[in-house]
Amino acid sequence: MSEQHCVGDSIVAQRHGRIGHILLNRPKALNALNLEMIRLITQALEAWRDDPAVHAVVLEGAGGRAFCAGGDIRAVRDWALSGDDASIAAFFSEEYALNAAIAAYPKPYISLIDGFCMGGGIGLSVHGTIRVASETAQFAMPETAIALFPDVGATFVLPRLPGELGMYLGLTGARLVGADAVHAGLATHFVPHHAFAALRHTLAQGGVATLAGFAETLPEFSLAPKRPMIDHCFGQGSIVAIEDALRADGSEFAVETLAILAKMSPSSLRWTFDILRAGAGRTLAQCLEAEFALVTRITHHPDFAEGVRAMVVDKDRNPKWTGL
Ligand code: QUE
Image (cartoon, rainbow, N blue to C red):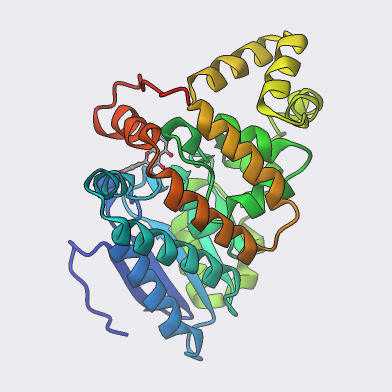
C-alpha cells in the first residue's frame, strides 16, 4: 500500500509501526461515510490482512468533532429521487459487506472514538474487537428520524445489548455519551480524550496489550435508574403497546420519550420494531441480508426523502410524514 496521501483524501491509510492506521478524513461532513470511503477502507483492510508487519488496525476520525456521523444519506436521497436504484444498491451492499468484513477481520481492529459516532459510524466500529470511547464521544442510531431504521448490522447488535436498551436506542435515537456506551456494550474501553495521542503512539510501538494502561475509572451508567422502566416499556409486543406502557408509566422520562417517538416516522418505528425483534434470532450475515432487503425497499418510501430533507438538507427538523 502506498504511504503517500494528500489532504483532500477522504481516507488516509498508513502504517505506523505495528499498526495500520485509517483516518476518516471528511471533517467538514463529520466524516460521513460515502462510497469512495467504503471502498478505500475495504482495500486497506484487505492489504493489511496478510501483511505480517501489521498487528492491528486503528480507525479514527479527523477534526475532533466526529468519529463518523453516519452515511452519505444526502447522496442516497438524491439517488432515490432520481430513480438511480443501482447506486442505492451499490452503496448499501458495499457498506454492509464492509461491516461483515470488520466482524470477520483476523487482527485486532480498534476504533478510537471522539465526538459523534452515529449510524454508519457505529457500523465501522461496533463489529471490531475494541471500541475506545472518550468523554466527548456520543453514540446514537438516529435513523427513525429520517424514516430509515438502525442498519449496518445494528439489527444484530442492538437486540444483544442488556435488557431492552437496544429497542430503546433504536426507536428513539437516544444519544449515549462515551461512558454510557461502555455500560451499554457499544464501546469496550473508556479513555480520556487527552490520552488519545499517547494511546495511538503506544499502540504503534507496543501493540494491543498496551491499551490496558490507559483505562480510566468508568463513571456510573446514567441510564441505570431508568433500566427497569425501559425494559418494561420497550419489552412490549408492538409500537402501540410500547406507547401505552410509556403513558401508563407517566414519569417525566416516559413523557419525554413519548414526545421523541411522536416526532419519528410512524412507518419507520414499525419496521424498526419488527426488524430488531427478528434480529435477536439471526446471525450477523442474516441481519445484514434482511437489512439490505428492507433498506432498498424503504428508501423509495416518501418519508425517507422527506426525513433527510428535514434533518440533513434543509435542517428545519419538521418533517411532514405521510402517516401511511
Ligand atoms: C438521522 C440520521 C442521520 C442524520 C441525521 C438524523 C444520518 C446521517 C446524517 C449525516 C450526518 C453528517 C453528514 C451527512 C449526513 O445525519 O444517518 O451527510 O455530513 O448520516 O437526524 O439517521
